Length: 218
Image 1 (cartoon, one colour):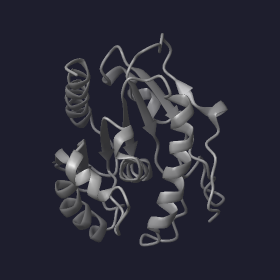
Image 2 (cartoon, one colour; image 1 turned 90 degrees about the vertical axis):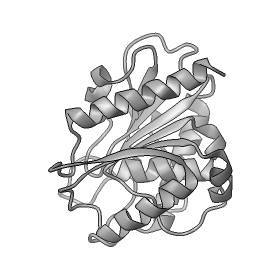
Image 3 (tube, one colour; image 1 turned 135 degrees about the vertical axis):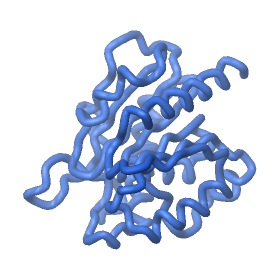
């Protein structure tokens, strides 16, 4: 894969409303979806924040629709270096789009969750919180990992007990890695497949509300 990707800012969807001076939540969709996919979560999110949903930079192989953050070649074909390339592209977009935001949080699903966590590892000082749904942290070390152990940013990791999309080895790795590099809250939802439930969204709302309270208290 190319060592540099570009996020198409023209494709970014923003929840309507005044964004001036508001904390920013960025939504990162999963494989085969696009910038329209997660925007429907807006009614479940806290009020008085700016919300953007970005389009991943790649197109999956035909006939898969939508967009992708990095290639997947079989269930075990998720290369950490490809996730890093996508995260660097996202950071370049964020440097422009969130230049005036007092705090930034990410909410990613599946591939988007992996990119959100990788972004946190590349630039731990840029993010106030990360919501990782049905995703994973990539194996291997990155330069920001030691800083994460000190900063211990807030991360919510949610997944379903019936999710068979993410390989078990990556789930095991993530369950060990996240407590060592973040202030972790999360939940395994009984019977949930590779998807998002209303119960999970209630937990996400509560987590993001705490993020906002932390900003107000600074």
